Length: 66
Image (cartoon, rainbow, N blue to C red; front, side):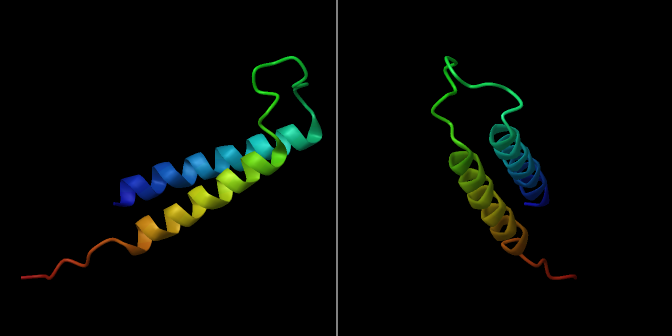
């Protein structure tokens, strides 16, 4: 589960960065197929993925030592 948490964490960070890039209008989105992906979409997706990261981290089962 730790690997899944790492992957989700990286995806969450990338989505948040994409939200900031969209807010700052670094890449003009007019006329592109991605024009419907607003900053709210990217930041909400980042929030959901980060919550999934927390769930994956806490959801690891504790193994009993023998």
